[in-house]
Amino acid sequence: MLENQEQEELTTVRVQDPRLQNEGSWNSYVDYKIFLHTNSKAFTAKTSCVRRRYREFVWLRKQLQKNAGLVPVPELPGKSTFFAGGTDEFVEKRRQGLQQFLEKVVQNVVLLSDSQLHLFLQSQLSVPEIEACVRGQSPLTVTDAILRYAMSNCGWVQEEDARATLAAGAELYGSGAGPGSPPLRSCPTPPSRWSDFGMEDNHSDSRDSPAKPPETD
Image 1 (cartoon, rainbow, N blue to C red):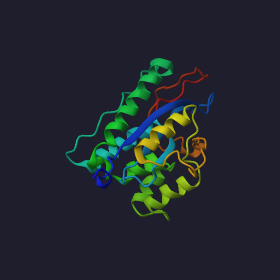
Image 2: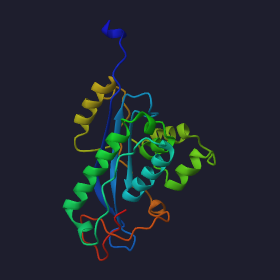
Image 3: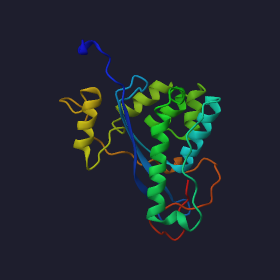
Image 4: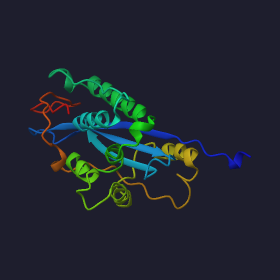
C-alpha cells in the first residue's frame, strides 16, 4: 500500500554565497546564489541555481503582490542605511531574510502559480526579459526558458557541501544523486547588462569596502 501512496512533495530553497560584483566600480553591488532542489510537479526543473540581487527580489515581491490579489505576500528584509550596508552582519541578516522570504513563497500555492516566480528562480533572465516572456513577447515560452537554462548546465550548482546536498536531494525524489546524474557546474555570475534596470536605490550593501560603497539592491 505504501508503494501506491503519492510521494510527499518537498522543496528546499537556499539563499547563500553573497558576492560583491563589479568591485571598485560605481555600479558595484552584492548578489546572492539561490539554490533550489525539489520533487514538486509545480517546478519545471528539479534542481536549479541562479544569482539574484536585492532589487530583483523587490521587483519579484511587487509582481507577486499584484497578481496574488488578497493573498498576503511575505515581507522582505529592509534596506540598509548608508553606513550599515557594508558590514558582514548586515549582509548575513539580509541573506537570512531573503531565504525566509523564498521559503514562505514556495510553500504558498497561489504564489507558486505565478510564472514570474519560476523564471526568477530557475532562469537567469533579467527582469525585462522575464516580463517579456510572461507577456508572450519572447521567442521562448516560460517552460522553454527554464529548460534551456537547465540544459545549458548553468543551473547545476557546485558548492563545498555538494555531496550532502545531493544526498538530501535523493531523499526528496529518489534519483538526485544516482548514476547518470547531470554533472555539477558552477552557479553562474550574471553579466553586467543585468546589473541595472532602472530601479532607484542609492544605499549600500557589501561585505567589503570598495572606494564607493556598493548598492544595496
